Amino acid sequence: MKKTFVLFFILAVVLSLLGCAPQATPTSQPATLKVVALPILDTMPVLVAQQQGLFSKYNLTVEFIPAGSAPERDQLVAAGQADGMLNEVLSALYFNKESARVQVVRYARAATKDAALFTLVANPNSGVKSVADLKGKSVG
Image (cartoon, rainbow, N blue to C red):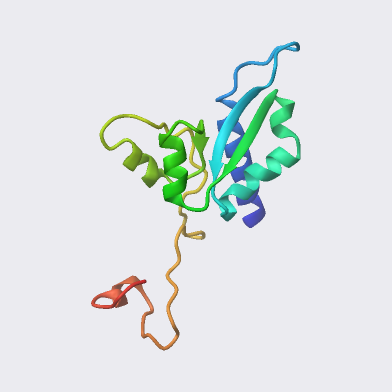
């Protein structure tokens, strides 16, 4: 299941980035796409795609701009220093709060009954066994 998920994620990201690239002709220069990336696991498939030469195969140069946090990533995009970002859909909604500034090209992850997007982690002695048990408790 996990291998299928990782392969699907790589394919989804590559296809979404390829949709941003102009059609290449044999004599054209590679198109360059600057993408802000956080040091998180979600970035790994795109880095693997780059290492495996998938972007250059389609005459696309992807330049990754490292960001240490989501606010830094958002500032780079807002300042026009990047063409795109790998992020969650919620941040795109915040970007577009007043006007359309970014467009979601593709999403790669969705919760299923077998693979949640988020997991609740609690101390075994906390008494928290479900979301309902969080009522009245502090969450950090």
